[in-house]
Image (cartoon, rainbow, N blue to C red):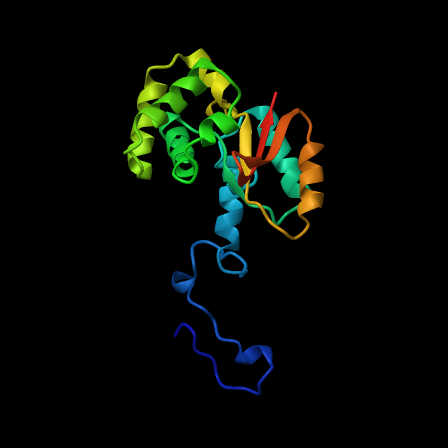
Length: 200
């Protein structure tokens, strides 16, 4: 009878039962580890590296810089990377709600900047973020790809934003300013605290 042996003293080989081969697992079980560790490692491997950075969908120069920054300061959090037109309009609208002049105080002078600020100025009753988002998106939809690319580096994946912090703030800012390919770093945009890095 499978699994049966005559009882014997503990520790002797005669006390080890036979195991029916039909009850064995077909595949070896993975070694135990912290919950989620294997899944997280697999996700990172599949995406080619750090899952948070890969989710930003950055262009090569900005992506390389993001990895360098996180290696130097593992606790930093990225808040934004590449954006489509809707994402850009939404992000800008969240700031316009707080400061109606934010666009002209933040972006370099260009026809598209003027068109965006003109829309805000010409629609004083539009104060909700959703309304402003819709209006700015209409301006973007009327713009050319060249105008959009020159207006914001987020639209080309050549910029990322970092969550501002107080601990080690100056060290982190110094690291950002030293990143390869950096074009501009802002720690304030239109009077609001924002950490924005963009690349050439």
